[in-house]
Image (cartoon, rainbow, N blue to C red; front, side, top):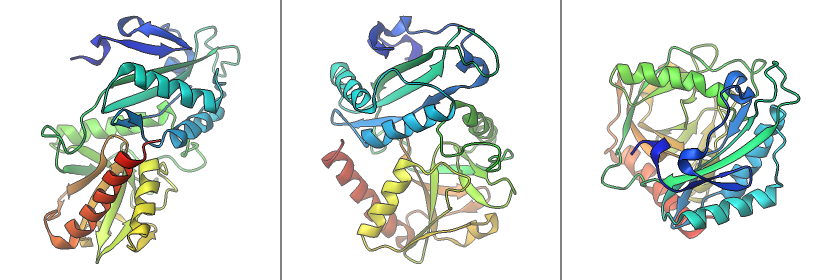
Length: 295
């Protein structure tokens, strides 16, 4: 079913609006100038996972582009929880979106109002029969911007155009996703909407989040690995190192944790004990966490 044709309702500026009627004006500032911020939140067994962390990041992202959310952090957590309960989905995806309205279209948009919407729809987990078991990624042509050009730790809609372009190019060449590189075109940053980890000699290696969003799932993965007494190295990683590792996997709200079986012409044996032993232990710990503590 097309996403815009679902039944149900969307939380829009404090009101429950029929799904098909939840729309915005075509002259909305957020649509033209990307003054918009969003989050992606997973629901497991009816409970949102890492909700506070996602809400905290949404507030930070909104502050960067001058969006004043109409609710407090605690109230938003309550609203999302109640909305998810009302939707009644056991496993779902929640998308809060904040944007500037249509009162004016100047580049600053100071008088444009702030809006907030929350949508929720069913989302099958990565272990379902229809889920992909691993992915392939292609190094992307378009790079992450330099630190002076963009607030990279804010989850703002505008930055995702880079990922969208890279992902489309990768799909056209038969890959599932793209590996986005740092501004120098040589260091690894992240995937188009996920972080990346490499496995080498029983330890994890992941790029510094200098040019990547320091994802909530990324942070959780590091915490779980350390709890499992696995060594974690956070450092710069060059593209020519990729072939030397035992394997790789991606982390993110949508992907959760998923193996990467190919990066460009480099192929990994994801069934190898050198990779799979490490990956499965972290994945098991992540599954235990998400099903046991979803607040």
